[in-house]
Length: 147
Image 1 (cartoon, helix red, strand yellow):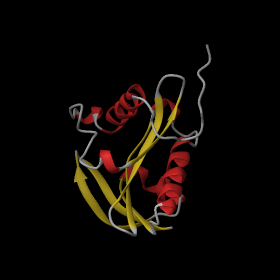
Image 2 (spheres, rainbow, N blue to C red):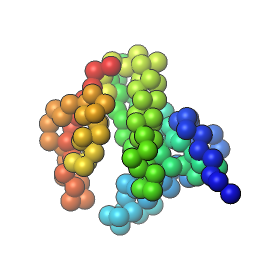
Image 3 (cartoon, one colour):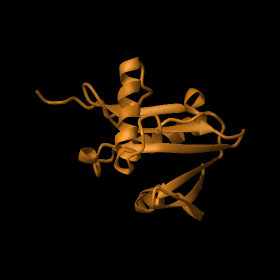
């Protein structure tokens, strides 16, 4: 049976979709560093705008936006299943989150990018504004984009 990919990022709708969404975030962003389940979540989950691309049964790309103040938003937890990378799914998630930011009146987005992700964000108009935290042995950079 061929997996169906919706291709359109959308908010998870059911408890099972949210579980798959958080599982993807944990597997891609935390598991390799032996971080416990639950470490992929933070205090902004309930106020964030979550977006994912799903196959028939699983999230294969995910990301979220939360509003910092009236004009600033932050994108976090961007993750694409390693088997699905380089297929444009991360770009789809990012563009959807930026559109949501515009709908919310957000004028600027900030994010922290792992060193290997900097070129991806630069391709989408983000600029490095400062070194970021050095977390789990990974260099990060603070990046920003005016919408």
